[in-house]
Length: 172
Image 1 (cartoon, one colour):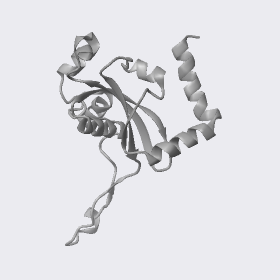
Image 2 (tube, rainbow, N blue to C red; image 1 turned 180 degrees about the horizontal axis):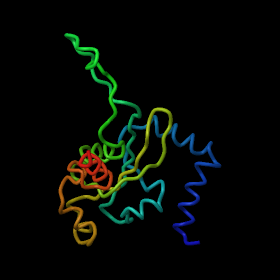
Image 3 (cartoon, helix red, strand yellow; image 1 turned 60 degrees about the vertical axis):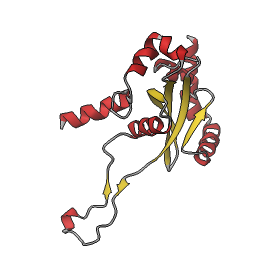
Image 4 (cartoon, helix red, strand yellow; image 1 turned 30 degrees about the horizontal axis):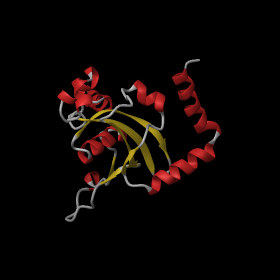
């Protein structure tokens, strides 16, 4: 078994067998800010699959997204009963929303991709791989150079999560 395959299987088994470690990790994450830059990816094998390289100009950001439906404000003048719904499903996936929030917060960086790292009762956690647009190492890299040339990928739905959302909208 290769190294990355072993890392990914250990990450999956950690959720199953060592629940106390995962639970304490999620409790710590819940008390942290919504967007937090992390030193290195939690799931290295998954990050490498999605384009992470440990080089200058590449950062990883953990985002927490509140789970549940979107609540609309109560209408003031009243409505017909059929139009008075207040809880609606989000049109985008939580992952696409996480990528967009990271792109808005770190506006000098471009989103490469993101992946799921865990959830508790209230939040889902994703890690987003981002690259600095102006960093010379990033600009000289073949893969990251192509990513940087397409500005605001996450906001235009050009990442994997955004493409899934756009495909589902176009099928309707």
